Amino acid sequence: MRLLQRRALAAVGLYRAGRVMQINGVAIDDTFAEAFAMKATRIVVTAHNERWALHAGVSATGFATSVIACGCEAGIERALAPHETPDGRPGVALLLFATSGKELARQIERRVGQCVLTCPTTAAYAGLAEGESVALGKNLRFFGDGWQASKVIGGVRYWRVPVMDGEFVVQETTPVIKAVGGGNLLLLCSSTDAALAAAEAAVAAMRRVPGAIMPFPGGVVRSGSKVGSKYASLIASTNDAFCPSLTRLAPRSELDDSVRCVLEIVIDGLSESAVAQAMRAGIAAVVARGAAGGALRISAGNYGGRLGPFHFHLRALAGAAS
Amino acid sequence: MSGWRLVARAQPRLRIDARVLQPAALAGLSRPEVERVTLRQGRDAVPLAELFDIERIEASTTARLVVEGDLSRFDHLGWCMSEGELQVRGSVGDYAGAAMAGGRMTIAGHAADLAACAMRGGWLEVSGDVGDLAASALPGEMDGMRGGTFVLRGSAGTRLADRMRRGRVVVFGDTGDFMASRMVAGTVALAGRCGAHPGWGMRRGSLVFAGFVPEVAPTFTPVHSNADVFWQLLARDLASFGGPFASLAQRRLRRYAGDLAVLGKGELLMPE
Image (cartoon, rainbow over all chains, first blue to last red; front, side, top):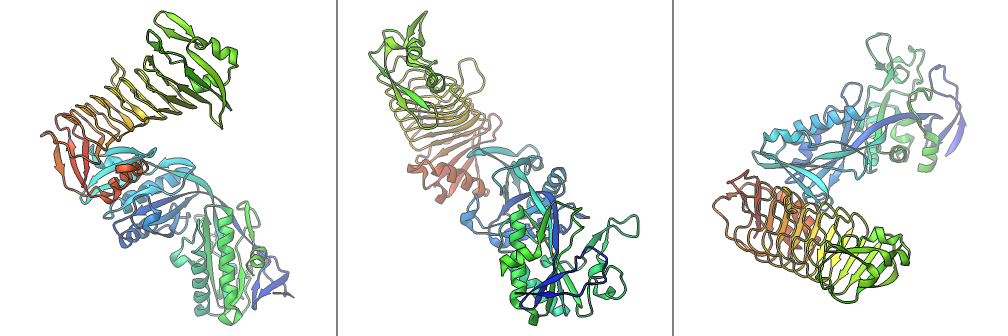
């Protein structure tokens, strides 16, 4: 690790130019990722085998990349072995995040109702022990048209809804807790191949962190956004400061000619530490590949501290990671 | 936290209403105050000191009361108990643990009729046998046991869990006729044999026969669909009681729905 004097960029955006940290030739910007408070829950979906659990999990967390238009951000946290699930079958742990408890409750019901209830052999359970309870199967039970039955087992109420393959067992409620959304890393690379390789390595490392998901396709987003737009009807628009095609055009650009491709990884976590741990793992994976792998800089998106109370300083994370 | 140990001096000539023997209520009292606590005996009130030798004991975090001796003429022990630990070393009279709402009560002996009736919460464990109408309703009431756990190491008389609405009853011994009659909901798990007409008139609820296959009434119908998920949840919960319940999750399930003479949403579960 060494510190170099970095040329101040002409950018007038939120990037703070200054001394640059380099690890294995990869520069770590002196900036921070700004995250905000969200509401989250974990849902455990089990099925007859792992394949069907995955089908349900993928479906239930589909179209859940950003709260901007999807209602929630969601992803598969990890696969669960039979000994880790309430009914002894293979399963997946899903994490769902929304900006309010009310919206999250709506999304849970909609997604479990349309994607888990419908999937053969599945069952759904709460995956958190404590928190404010919202409905999981409480209203879905009415699909049973009067044939549904409840059962309290070990102090937990379940609903048994008759369906064509037997019965759909679902826990009545799931706890919702305060969480952190919007942690992010920007990987500034010399080529598309290098950026994809760096991002894939980072996401693979980050997926091993419990309590965190990367909600975008493959964990990676290419259309990083800024708040607002020149068009009044849009609440978000392209992050022109990090678009290589605008390096010499956009006044806010933070790139130089060496950067040809930028990919972002967005992280939502059940806690601040989960997001920090995931970002640390991602940074470590990218810098381990070194500049020879094509990763030139790691940066992060923030809004000058105006968006949220959680600030993840890259250099602190990189220092810990290295 | 401290507690008390009460050792019965002799069996009283008449029945005693022992509902005031509550661990939490006595824990905060001094010895003279405990000695002056009165129990109803018909129209009379008898001070505790006349009936028991009283000794202070140390308890860990919860209020504790230990009662020893032949208490078969003491009724309503643990009545409406909501917290603390009540240990009875000896056999007790009627209504043991009745209307209990919380805490833990253990009886190292037998209990007479109406044990655990109208129980709402907590844990009641009887190492011996109980009489009729255990875990059922109080006379005149519509709902039987409606919460908590009742573990019976011995056998029960007739009408166990009559009108039971919620909670779980785990019986290691046998039961008499009409087990879980008119059951509204809840779970009864039986390791031994049962008398005639189990689940008679049951509307909802689950009866688990871990070691005995009863004669199934014609008002119950076999259900062949897959209920493995629910069974695993229930069997794993019951497995914590050990004994014949420990291996339930490994056994395949045979299921009957009924009683079709009424709502018919109850079930007889017979692991094979």
